[in-house]
Length: 153
Image 1: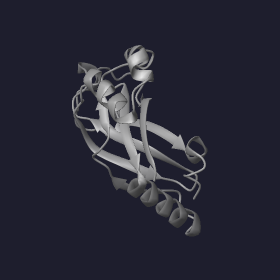
Image 2: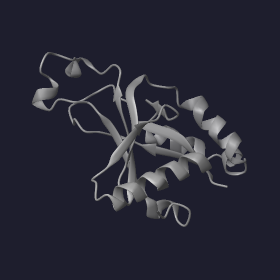
Image 3: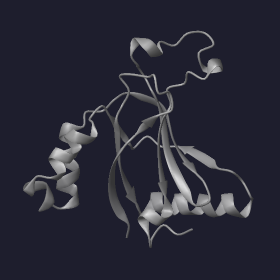
């Protein structure tokens, strides 16, 4: 049975965006693994670029890499089971509000993506902002080799 808790920093595709989430955490269980693997096979078999589905179980947070590292370096964290580790991280990773959270599945990787609900003043939504490429979409990509052997499609 697969049950992997992942914490990662995220990237905003707009370099000028501020006040956007800095990290994401999620648990990949057997059902999610099978769904991603099945979709990767579908993408490969039908020669598609990607497919995506809504995924609301990820925790997008303003917590930065340094704050996460401080927790993971603690002895209590290192000697705890995965459930306790997840609880410790969620204590320091308050949720940031996001919209349109999706998992995009390609033939050999998957990507988490979401839109921050609120950004800094430099990202105020104006008419036509997305037409000019000012989107503040957050992304984090994972290749299947990062999860071998259980994620090979």
